Amino acid sequence: MAVNLDKPQRWKADTQLSVDDYNRWFLEYAPITYRETRAHATVYVEDILLRTDNLRRLTGDLLFQHPDALEMLRMSTSPPIARDRLVGLAQVSKSLIENMERRKRISPNLTETVVREQLERITSVISHLIDQDIFIWFNGDTDPTLEEVRRASTVVADRLCGMLTDPLIRNAQEKRQLQRITLWLETHGYAESEVRNLRQMLSGTFAHRVNVAAMQEGSVVVNIPIDTVIMPRSAAAGDLPLLVEAKSAGDFTNTNKRRKEEATKMRQLRNAFGDQVRFILLLGGYFDSGYLGYEAAEGIDWVWEHRMDDLAEFGL
Image (tube, rainbow, N blue to C red; front, side, top):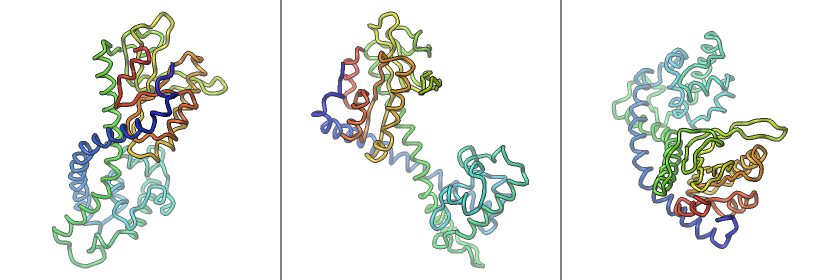
């Protein structure tokens, strides 16, 4: 039975309610997160400036010892240089850049000699592009004042904040959604389960972040992460649980770029479990009629965060 996918007359109003609900959460959460991240980022930038004599002693050895400094150094150029652009300009390994920034360590696939050569090329490019409107002392003979260092650190910290807060906000969105569905389920008599196998879950239980073995075309098995798996209290022997994918977005553009992801998951799940599989979305934020129509055409239904009681209509 369809709950929301077959009611396009409600989509526009639901989208506005969803946007309002998301914005209330964002205005409460984001400023706090940004202030905290900005404070940490400023200290981080000041520490790197201290270690590099305010960027006048920028060496490959520094990056070898402190690979985490690369992210800050990219934000110190004019314009701030993207990872891929740095890879091209310095002619270095992309995996080296990604390991330094994402894992805070040097790539294990390169020898130390090769790494040091590439780090020297990186520092050469960065030194050439240093933003001298921020680091006004860079090519001068005098030391910067404490006020000049603090001002430059704050500017670079602001640049970093956009990079650092986005993942924090995404993680907080996911946490919020899982908390909401947990609250609804527990209020309606469900208990969290340790069982991670779809065929072995007991009725009236649920589990978060379950890997499900689905199937691509050509009978290729692929593991799909499912945010929440719920076995209805009324489930009979052999029934599959309800699979819920939590989706949250702060703008309309990204949702329409990502809308094919859910359709792909649905096809892979049907390949593995047949038409009896039930896969729905938990939507919070910016999801317009274009996105909803695409998912509806794929046979994917959904529940809105602002109307969690719709879950009951899926037999829960």
